[in-house]
Image (tube, rainbow, N blue to C red):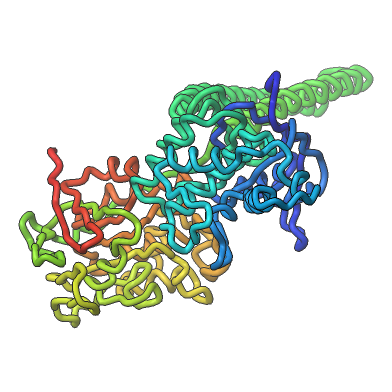
Length: 560
């Protein structure tokens, strides 16, 4: 336990009204610096933050804070008439200050202001330092998505610096932020003073943390260092755990073998006793006495050996619990047959400049939020909205002709497909048919692959056993993503061009690792939109195409 924690969890359990348990007897603590909270999708990280913030009440156990918490959720919902002051959370104080300045001496105004006489100056200074609009009366509707998130986080920092909150809680703050907004957020975090707990899968953000905490299997582990150091420590721990498991399994095999050998000796002795009795070699009393003694000895030996086997099996069970079973995707995908130099698509900027995608190249499409990257993909694929049949693993039918997709508006970037075999994974993968069994959803893209073979291939995507026959609607978020990815990559014939739009949004770190592993096995061309630079760096990109606000495209080749 930390010596001076900001938050302490005492055997916390939380269950939803329908009885589903989100957290089960979790204990642990967060320090007074910056803590990155990680864990698999569905582990309960967001629920844990809401419990700390007091928005939820534990079913059992207790949460203790040194002060009060300020919570910023993943999605910021605002009234259309909200102002920057509203977003900062200082509107009541600002109104009271302006009333006092206008001559209103109502004591209630002074109570609202308290010690925050300089709140406007401090707010403007913080906004300016982050490169944000400083007008407190400005409508939030005039801010970009990234500016809205950064302004809300600035409000958290402002309230913490004024003493109205002691623990700041941020839930996935970099989701959907472009590169510039992320860099400004990182700078905010670097200068953070006070306790901060951040739920995130953003590796760059996690590297700025003083501590790393992981919520896993009802246990909260806290490590004194950023995520990369935690991973290194964890690898050492897992190597030791794996060695302990191998030793325990070896001991169990030895104890079982000795138990079998002892049983054979006991059986041999019993056969010899029966033979002696049959031959009347000894008097009956002596035979009975020896039989009773042998049976007692055999029983005692069996009991001792059974205890040893039981202890060895218990040691194996304990060692297995210490070894993580995070499976990794390992697939051998069919070759889509994309020779070097084969032209697959053309992207056309608003200025008429054309950039050719040829296979098997790996290209990133980047640019600030709001410039139209997703729109460009949809124009290229002729998919006007996420529910189009091209979404979530659909592969263009061979009967479709390659054709230019013109812009639906004047200006803007457009594109031209030069292959019939293209597959698209949109930002939202909930367009898979909810009522369809997993196997049938995947077979839609590979109708000629035998079901048994498709089951084997799905297993390599960690979709196994009964999960293959379950309706898509019953899958967890991670399972649903892997099914959508499998539908994409297992298509028959295989796609020559794979298009992904922000694929790591809302993915935990393990799922991102699985995605990288699957894409590493893909031998076609790849066009991916992402603000996640750590993810892009792992893909072995050949080039980056940047889209600006005017719809123009620039290309930067990457050295091999």
